[in-house]
Amino acid sequence: AQKTVLITGCSSGIGLALAVKMARDEQKRFKVYATMRNLTRQDKLAEAAGRTLGKTLEIKQLDVCSEESIKTCVSSIPDRRIDILVSNAGMGLIGPIECQTIDEMKTVMDTNFFGLVRLLKEILPDMKKRKSGHIVIISSVMGIQGILFNDVYAASKFAVEGFCESLAIQALKFKLQLSLIEPGPVITEFEKKVFEDGMKMDLSAADEETADMFTNIYLKNYKQIFQILGQSAEDIAEVISQIILCKNPPFRHQTNTLYTPMTTLKYADPNGDLPIDTFYKMVFQHDKIFSASLNFIKLLRWRSRKSFDLGNPSQ
Ligand code: NAD
Image 1 (cartoon, rainbow, N blue to C red):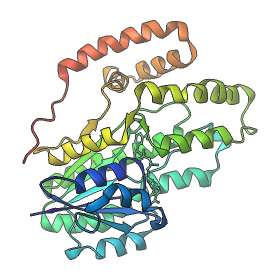
Image 2: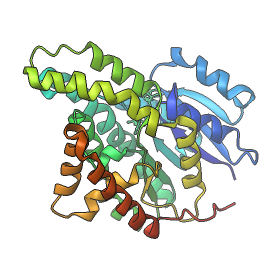
Image 3: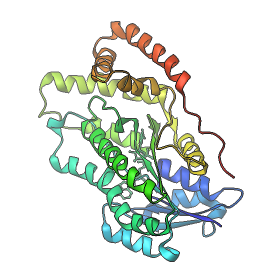
Image 4: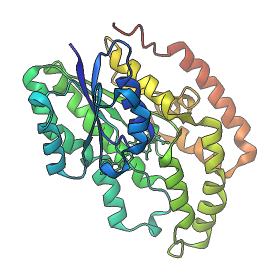
């Protein structure tokens, strides 16, 4: 039987790419409910969906910040049956915390963290009753490791990870699957918007040194990091669909092998100093980048011995 997939945040980026990929499955294994907050932004998705629109793909309104909107959307699905939930909607925020308002920070938490909580409050009870369902959450490498000037965004993704780690134990009892996808940089509207907001930011509340660090170190290197390490939305959609088709999907999966040495530093040093020290050297002591790179290579080797194999997707 066809599996129903509900994806949030499908007007752009990873959500759009995944919705289209799953709707185009040659074996027509999925019925995709591609949802978005604002239906006036559906043109790009409708165009990309092509002939699948109205067949294996349906567009629905869903704002993860509104319980009512979630309820209305889920209730409009036959038997409220969602086999696979992909919690993808999210937003970024960069800059010194002195220059961000608490309201801006709350919006990030409300979208990235409470958005997931709201979805699960509505969808989890049905999955538990059926004792079947796969919950796929688009987290980030910043859900396991903080990065300079991404304090609140990282906090929102850490919240997601802690929430899911706790829930996963209960989910196991109900035979439900939970998978956290942890991409590194992905070139989408997200990256553009975050950069533009950073460029426009009023830095007057920050001291000169912090403002300079943000403008002349962080923002200056931002584009380059995305150019060197960035994956495409389609790359991430490919990984997510593999995870969905996997017989035993992993609880965590990082999509970017170039980034794994960084996240591995955390597990290599229980004291937590190694990743912080390495990031510090990368940002502030370019001459020491060599020793930091050596650390990476050593860890890359260690990691490649332990690398995780997704195995063959089930048919
Ligand atoms: P994107 O901006 O293209 O997509 C995010 C989508 O979420 C947008 O379509 C936006 O409209 C939607 N959204 C925001 N608030 C919403 C709300 N209240 N209700 C419903 N939809 C809402 O960016 P993306 O890169 O495709 O981001 C998708 C996910 O991937 C996010 O959770 C993001 O945190 C995560 N992620 C992105 C990157 C990256 O570098 N782009 C890296 C790691 C993780």
